Amino acid sequence: MAQSLQARATRANAVPAGVAAGIVGIVMLVQAILRTFVAVFSNVAYSSAGGINTGYDPGNVLAPFGQLFVELGTTVIPAAIGVFLAFWLLVPLVPELRVPRVVVRSLVAAAIAAALVLVFTAVYSGSSIFSGQQSFAYAVFGTAQAGLYTFINVTPLVILAGFLAWFWVSKGRPAASAL
Image (tube, rainbow, N blue to C red; front, top):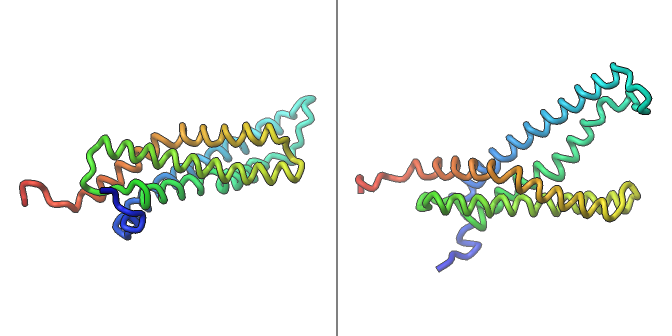
């Protein structure tokens, strides 16, 4: 018999969910920061080379930092929240699980993280449409791409985080021979 949502929303389930979400959030944050610094350094290299006949504005060297904040708000934070909510409420990581179940639950958590990123990206793209910064078709395809990319990118990370959190939860359980 399946547990109710209220029965699964316990502090015991929140701890491994928080650990897994923390791992996912920190790794995604580090990746975003590294991508930003690579973009800034490439902009510096390009602007120091002169940007020959391209109309490049050297004042935009630090522009990738603005994109970092957009990525934090539309990808990193929603993905971590999605992983947390999935592992806490929908597919908790409990010690009794077997390896295939941990993998399936991690896939569900990755799908929920991608769905949340899709929602946050759609809201951000919607605001860009209404402000006239981008077209509707561009926003729709960009949003779909963000959701799919997030699922593909984050799935191995969520599986790893799921296993680490599951191992951590399972370590306190007594061995079968000790019973």
